[in-house]
Image (tube, rainbow, N blue to C red):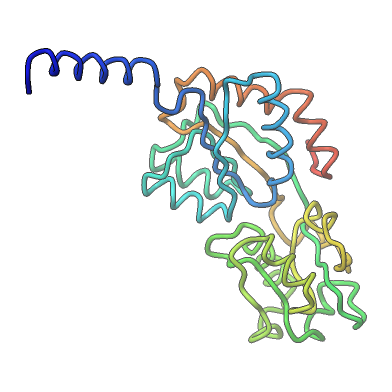
Length: 249
């Protein structure tokens, strides 16, 4: 390459790398599926006030998200639907425990379109198909299995449980009538168009549904990530959570 051409090439590369910073203002969020509407509304509100910040959102089962983060998926903020998966990433030193806060709380209900009389968890053996999030990765499924076991009906439901990849898939199965009913969160049931809440699962049967949130270790020193975490603890976030039926205490 001729000296003049080489100089032009170097100057061009320098200009490109200095004027187009990669992923400037971009935050990666890994969030429990049941918070999809809340986070979509809050990120839209935040971007309206801070147009330089953009969001890449990944919604799914908390266990699946934790596995993705463990395997190197980009993430600045993790919001789980139970403490187990948050603790898992803290033990792996992938999230910063010092930034952890409780975002919200929820409750477990059973919703469906069945015409059979189902008014309590003890009526479930009457049904043929029941959707439940896979307990290995879906907190809603883990809460549901805890309730089923404590109610003493686990054996009676043998062969009747249909595993779903997350709580939203459970709701979809119930809405389509592919199952008689599904264990979902109270906030998910509010979004249903066909499935009705048949009963609320007694709180004494399962641990309280908690949504912990924390920055990843890589994002703990990121000013934009810290600012958004602070926003999620403010009045606007609490208002949106209440609008969608989440509990704050």
